[in-house]
Image (cartoon, rainbow, N blue to C red):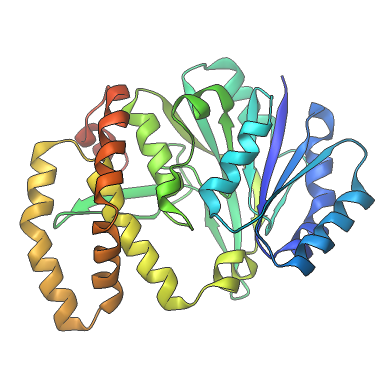
Amino acid sequence: MRVDIVIPNFNGSHLIEKNLPSVLTAIDEYQGKVIIIDDGSEISDKQNLRKIVKEQNEGKIILQEHVHNKGFSSAVNTGVRLSNADFVVLLNSDVVPRSDFLKDPLRRLGRDENLFAVGCMDESIEDDKKVYRGRGIARWSKGMLHHARGEVNSEDTFWVSGGSSVFRRSLYLKLDGMDEIYNPFYWEDIDLSYRAQKSGYTIIFDSKSIVTHYHEKGAIKTNFTSSQITTTAYRNQFIFIWKNITTLRLMLSHIFYLPINILLALKGGDTNMINGLFLAMALLPAIIDKRKKQRELYKISDLEVIKNIS
């Protein structure tokens, strides 16, 4: 059983320098590689990352560089395509895995060929508090799909996080991986998990697979403003619905509530929502094209997927 770990980097070489020894320890017994994708970082960060890899490398690290910043989906897709392992682990640069975090996910993936991915337990450090993340829930309300953190007392989950999860590489590639339409970030892991479930595969959350995640120090909050982050999240929420929802009742609900939601946003001064909507509309031709191609694999309805984890 071969396993590789993919780590995207965007101006976060200092995090990789700190966390790489723990990653190498975790992958050691599986004879895999750590694949680092630099996603167009500043030249000083690129140089520092090259230095770190040179000092640490004993044939266990592959460093691939994007000339320009493309976004999270593009970075991890590059890493997965460079791998030739049976399973690939996606880890953010601000994640520190426990040495045995792969043991249980790989055991479960090894005995169930229909299992698409396993999400890890995130001990998330946020404002000096520890919040347990990794299991997601979702609900359909007023024409929109809303997702949230779920309690970590069950293995069912609406999605597995792109920041700490283990994927069956063959199925990841079959579904074309993370959809790069969501670049630079957000909703891409929810989208892939959703498409996998609609295609008849399963995903689970594994509370025995533990990593520590320092969210406040990651690339998104370091390199983007609060307004940019919120606008992107809104844009990608619309993209997700327009691209993936095929149940007529849900789409009619979305269309009915859309003008109401726009009026509420205007009344409340939520310019980020309005900007996100227009940015999504600009991508409609690409969204429609992807919708046609991806639905060919679907075997399960939206209602079944959403109802299962609500």
